[in-house]
Structure formats: C-alpha cells, structure tokens
Length: 172
Image (cartoon, rainbow, N blue to C red; front, side, top):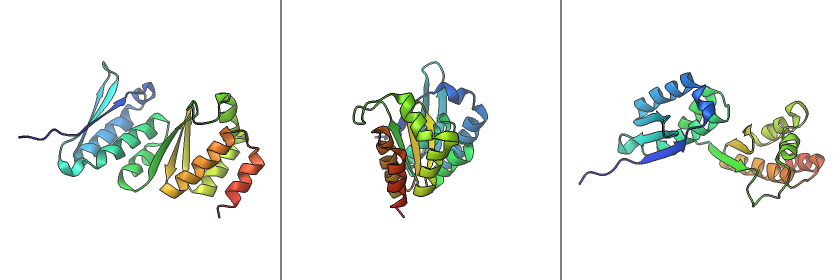
C-alpha cells in the first residue's frame, strides 16, 4: 500500500501576492529539497507537500518561512530558517491568555519611539521580531525566543518599559 505524502495547508496571506519573486525563489529551493509549494489563489491556500520521506521534516520549516514572508521579513531571513535550528514563535496579541488591552497601544509600546523598544528586545535576546497587527513573530534559538516572549508578555500586561529593560538587563 502506498503511503500518503504529508501535506501542510497555510492560508494565503494577501501580502504574499506582492512577493511573487520571493515565493518563486522559495518554491525553487523547495523543489531542490523535495518540498512542493503551490499557491492556490482560488481556495486562498499555500499547499506544501513532501515529495520524499527525507523532505517531511522540512515541511514545518517551509511553513515558518512562508509565515516570515507574510510578516514582511526579508527573503534571506525566510530562507535562513529552512536551514538552521531557529524557532519561530507567533504571538497573537488578541489571545485570551494575554492580558486584554488596546492592541494599538500594546504595539506602540512594543515598538517604541523609532523602534527603540523592539530593537532593545532583539539585541538583549538575540532574536528577530516581526510585527503585523495583531500578531508578532519572534525568531531565534528556543531559549532566546522564550526570553523575548516574556518581555513581550510584560509589555502587553502594562509593565513599565523601564521594568522590562531591567528584566532584559538581568538576562546577561
């Protein structure tokens, strides 16, 4: 009996339609590694299929790469995630687990003046952070992503920014 190929379906984010070149490059890279990527505009999906057993572990990596592209990450960041051990964590600021609050206010606090708060979290935790309201994506090692997630949680819960900076300073 033939085994079915593992398939992942990802909602087609409209922002990806404007990144045709990046999606094409990702599709070509996928072909080389045994991952078939198809954009189904009619159903609004990106379909990822492993064409070999060896490619099955790569499916989640390609899903993460597509997520990064949809958040506006540069192609190099999306491509890099396929080949390394980075973790991609998506945080929904509307998640009921997080303290409720005005999303725009939380994002404003998270970004800071001229991106200063976001940059400080990235530098202190050695992560990359991408924001697309109401979600935030954090990329880095497992430990680094967890530290950044905690800093973001503190900001979302209304903790003063200097207190978040103190938390970040104590990480070193």
